[in-house]
Amino acid sequence: MSKEFVFNINNKQNWTGQKRAVGTALQIMMDNTKTSLLVKVGEYKEKKRHKQLRAFYECITQLLPQYNAQQLEQGKKEFFEDEFKFILKYVGGWFKTIENRKGETMPIEKSFKDITKEEMVKVLNNIQKWAIDSGFDLCIDEELRDFNEYYKITNLNNKESDE
Image 1 (tube, rainbow, N blue to C red):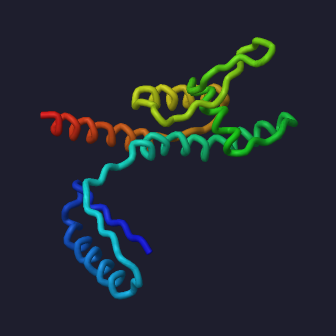
Image 2 (image 1 turned 180 degrees about the vertical axis):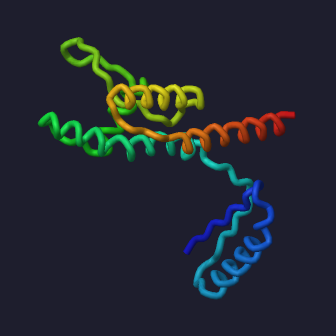
């Protein structure tokens, strides 16, 4: 059994309740375990990847049904989420190219692993433009707002720790 507790710096009024929950969970684990326990305490760093991908996956959620409906109207095949993910990365401008055996350049999928905030914003803006041009409805304002807010806080924290 494993439990994680995150003490959010922006929500300190909830820390007392969380401290109690940690104590209770630890006591239950100690009473019910037949093996040794490991307790780690350290600084929590939210993975930037989650924030970066949230708006992108919201694009998939909203656009895939519309895209597939259009495909079916045109007598074409529907796409699965993984296939559509590549389509969005392609229209967003986030892909690599390779040469096939005939010497022709082909786009292939590129990971978001090391994407910067600026690059991700560009990808999302390109996806929005494509959606509008294609006649699709897309609303990712909340995800973009959260994404930008996360980076403002992250940049402030990084500047403070650099000083």
